[in-house]
Amino acid sequence: MRCIDSLRAIAIIFMLAIGVVIGSQQASACACCGTYRVVNVEHWDVLNVRSGPGVQFDIIASLKPGEGCISQTGERAGNWVRIDAHNAKGWVNAFYLALIPG
Image (cartoon, rainbow, N blue to C red):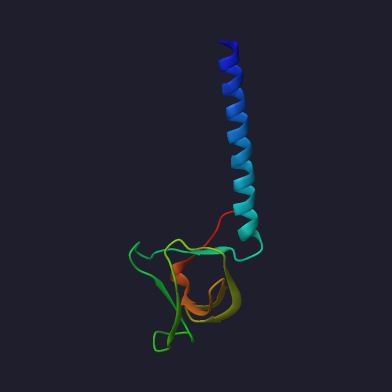
């Protein structure tokens, strides 16, 4: 019985250690990039990134719902903000971005 308890304790410690390593890798992977994520977009849809601040501009990329690591450059035009994401640099409507708590 004592041996089984020891094995359980070791397994729990191992699982916790793996969780800490994985969690820190995920946190650091996004720590150096943006602080915003895509919101208000259905799971089957995408957020279009446009070449300029409005729907009349070309779609140059798209972001998935919930996608994070998005930075705002500071440029604004009405409700539109210029972003820099890992796979896209362009304009999106601010309604579709939310600050990642942290």
